Length: 114
Length: 114
Image 1 (cartoon, each protein chain N blue to C red):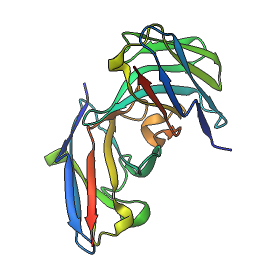
Image 2 (image 1 turned 120 degrees about the vertical axis):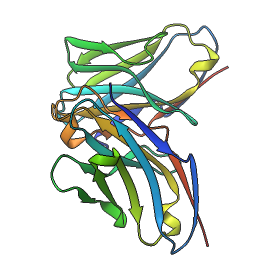
Image 3 (image 1 turned 90 degrees about the vertical axis):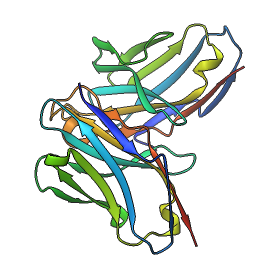
Image 4 (image 1 turned 30 degrees about the vertical axis):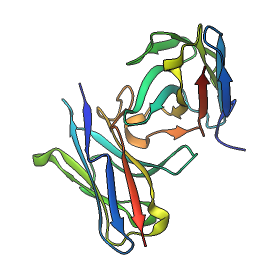
């Protein structure tokens, strides 16, 4: 069965600093991987997804993630944090294209200080 | 109008009461899901439905039931609410390629059981 582990429930960075949110997955078949963002009092919004094409995936708001099969990782990065990036971020995995349902990690809260 | 609409947005109910959370969508998607979000636990799958006649239990279905009234409507019921069902509930939809396209989420229903 697939699973997702997000390392670090809370990450704090200064404005302009690099953002790195970690996600490791477990899947018995080639995975499809997603990052979602949740702003306060809102639903979840898709940031980016990996679906077996390019291993470096670019998403919205300057975020990107790299799929590394050897490390079973799909870490989310952004070169320069902005105050508006403060939110909760969820990594999710699906077992292939026809996966039954997305399995989510426990989330990482990103705080950005000025 | 939102693609996925959840009602109510907020609800306070008493222990032992029956309550229904409703979800409707205009995406034309076949698949619909109910998740609950708890701080530090991420999103956990309660039930999912691939079409009107196909309903499946998720990870944490005990104490919940669902009804797929039409392709566009998927309701979640708590037959006898208890305090540990206090949570943020999300409805999500996807087409058959959930592993490729991911989900569209509603804005959530915040349920408090007192």
